[in-house]
Length: 252
Image (cartoon, rainbow, N blue to C red):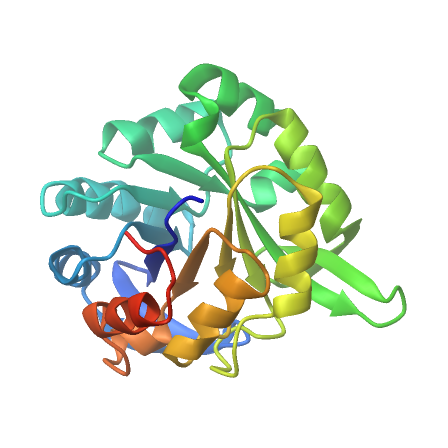
């Protein structure tokens, strides 16, 4: 069994880290480069940067932030937000990112997954999926544009397609659980983990160490991602890892 990973997420808007609840009410959480360096020192296994205001100026800001961060850390990091072409991917990888996260662009142009995977290798391509429960369908629906647009696509069908097209990993965010700190969305995560054969990073809802234990134990996620609890020092990464190891979780 592969060791589980703990991944802090930095949502970056106009060069600053922000955090909200259910994708709204954002508040400032600090400087991305400083936070990244701190998490590297604390033993995070990887980092995810999401440029959530990926406008034209946001993209350039992000390249600069990526470049500065790459000089400060030694762990792999994934960058997503506003990446819509192989050229964009190349620019971010050249700036020092290890993996590329694509979400809206992949839904609008699924061929982008194939192209990125063929050009840079599947291990570089992380397809981020924002999913919300649709009561009418009794199933989960994929949303794009930072959780603002429902797509009419079923999450399980989309993750299977992403895998077939060459994604190396799925970053799965439950919009229902995001920022609530009530725990990861176990039914959604378990369903996605069972539908595909590539690693799944669970995101949305982490509030305490047992939430990570549950998502590893009950849903079989490969990694747990969180933002709020790390940014506001509610749980430190070393304390979380110590607790998980005590529960018998194989951790890096």
